[in-house]
Image 1 (spheres, helix red, strand yellow):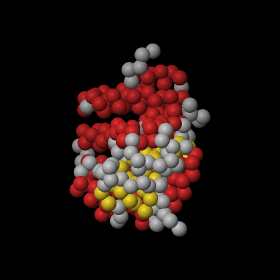
Image 2 (cartoon, helix red, strand yellow; image 1 turned 90 degrees about the vertical axis):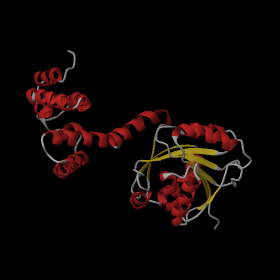
Image 3 (cartoon, one colour; image 1 turned 45 degrees about the vertical axis):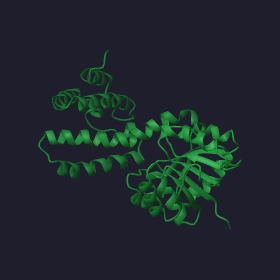
Image 4 (cartoon, one colour; image 1 turned 30 degrees about the horizontal axis):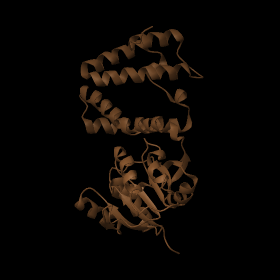
Length: 294
């Protein structure tokens, strides 16, 4: 059986991770790689275990082309690819951006290629770890049916769990992913700063907070957010909220802003509790303490 060929434009952390997974599983033959820096491209080739460096002029036709460039370069690279003789009708060109729809590749679609977007909801901070941890990752998919018909089995074979996303809502979808992943890191930093302000060393603070975080996530696996909410807002304790907001203001204005914004969202969840919900009077006092206008 002839394997589908894969060209990779942008051999960064995500691109080289997926290429290695597919190459090592015998699912594709990695062919040509285009990168901005020769050394970086050679490192990607060594990591993948296949492929060769190329330029756009040297690029050979491939069944699949992954554009793994920064988001603001995707449309330009699609236009450049569409202007070459390399691209053939019914080739598949896809990207893995969470923020942009597959339509950003319309220039190659007009040449007869099929396009898609498959966004893995996982971290690619370190490719060697990402290769080990990718199985079980959820992937948001949209695009041409013919493209997804070819890409779906490739992602399934490396352990992906695919789901559909509305391309018109990709910005909100990605905002949700950013809040859950990137902003979670920032939130943990805010929590550690608060603990440090109380004289708790960061390593000790993280060791103490981690079981609390894990328990909260387990609760969210089983309960709706409103039912999983605990703490001073859930209890209707406006005095505690006011004291904590004042303390965070003394520490760091950004941490205070974070506390305030999340506290107001927590008020919405507390009001939706089916059992043991704080009274409307208690919630009004909390909102006032958080500085929300009446």
